[in-house]
Image (cartoon, rainbow over all chains, first blue to last red; front, side, top):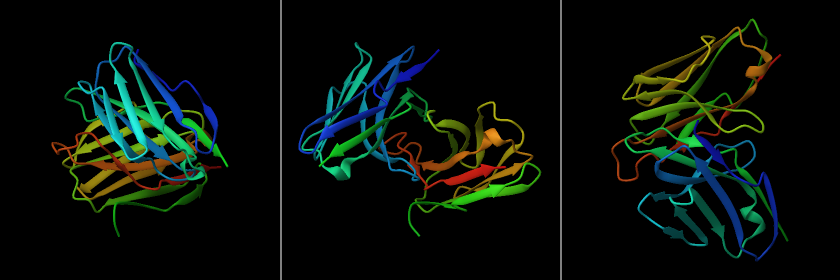
Length: 112
Length: 115
């Protein structure tokens, strides 16, 4: 069956460092991979989308990579700040499908 | 109002009650979704509406009944719920066929507690 794993349930890093979150998937051929941010008691907010034929995408301090051979995406936040503390969700969708399958998320805590 | 709104934000109900959750999107999107989010579990897609037509029902118990009267409004009618149905219920919308396919915009959610 299809499976999405975000390897760390929680990640603590020091302010100013680069946070790297991992999303792995099995039995899936996604056309798109997305990252969302979710704050406690709130709905997820879209951050970045990367297509299967793209290796890397950037937006300000955020960078996403997508390796369809390894079946893995890495999400980086450079120069992390306490305001980046949140849960980050990875989501996949297949070709021709508009439905998303989400991972459980990684809770990031940036320590001042 | 902008984005996706949901009411109520919090709901406590007994197992014999009937209640409804409401979602409204102000983005001009043509697809709307209901998700359930329980602690330590990924978001579970419950229902999908595409141009007001229900296209998915992911094995959701009949005690949850969706309604989509138009492309801007979505309801989730609840009756005879169980305590394990307590969760955060999220509504989302997206524009199918748009330049950024599949990106979904979420509301703040309704925190439901079933006693």
